Image (tube, rainbow, N blue to C red; front, side, top):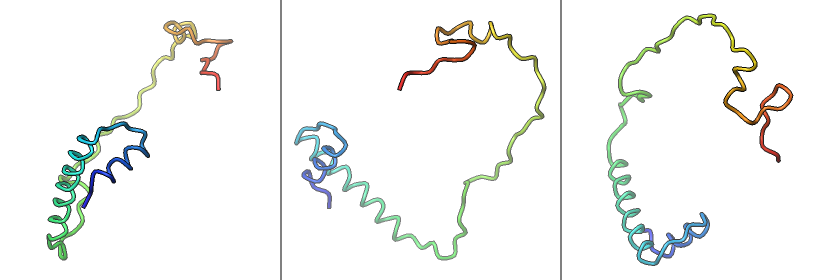
Length: 92
């Protein structure tokens, strides 16, 4: 189904350099993965409800607590990227 030439084409599009041997190995691996998907297609899921999560979970939340904010000098203590009281980002 997937041949080494197709793998090389995809690798070139992704700008990944792979050898012919690697392309052949990947082609075999991709065929195995596709065979697994074919097996999944054979499973009868007609009366199965969709499951969005395999186990029931409830979100753990906490109340927000007000805390003291940092002083400006403390905020910029570990950075050299401070300019006029703001963080300086990279130049475009």
